Image 1 (cartoon, rainbow, N blue to C red):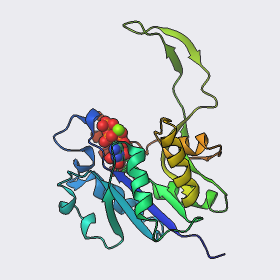
Image 2 (cartoon, rainbow, N blue to C red; image 1 turned 90 degrees about the horizontal axis):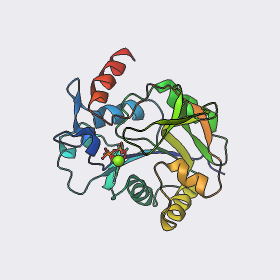
Image 3 (spheres, rainbow, N blue to C red; image 1 turned 60 degrees about the horizontal axis):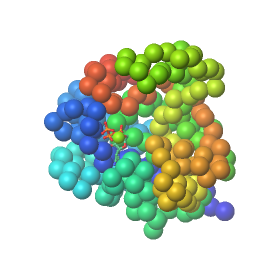
Image 4 (cartoon, rainbow, N blue to C red; image 1 turned 30 degrees about the vertical axis):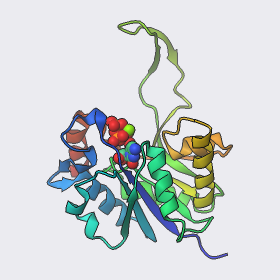
Length: 233
Ligand code: CTP
Ligand code: MG
């Protein structure tokens, strides 16, 4: 069998509703660069990928202005209405190139702070695995189950000892991931990350511990935080 290749998929077709900015959050700037450019260059420069597919919103008018649009390692495709649709669209765009056992790493456009060591550890931990897995970080805070009242009241304290925050990249075998996403979407399952689709199809993704500062820029306060984290890396 030939060695599996490594493909990077970056879903970047969201509109960043929670960020409440004048443009999608992947096109906000940190230190004068687009978040999407920071994410793509940090990731592509940290591991030997064979190719990269970026899913873009059909009405995206910012991409031509990015550094990444001139990068020969990167191709683009049309994203879908949910994140999982965008990832599936990128997987299908790779069909002519990718083999069933090739690895696909899916990494959110909105996570510019990925550390090279985390990416390396994810790949080295999983490269001989049948299914794959994801970067994840143990939950640090005490967790409460809240009631439906306004304001919500604490009903109980939830045991956090086996709870993890799912991060990206998430790394899975090409054919297994396509099948899992198709099956989950057909069954109306909520698919908020690749791992949830793999879990639904009966696979057990490996949790590879990653740095908690691999944050997803989601709300306005995250922008300054991401800038600070990047300045310290
Ligand atoms: N994403 C995507 N296609 C979608 C929705 C999201 O490619 N239809 C991407 C986003 O661009 C982002 C990643 O998936 O890089 C994680 O999603 P999220 O943080 O939820 O981003 P948005 O959907 O843009 O933000 P919001 O949910 O606040 O609208
Ligand atoms: Mg979203």
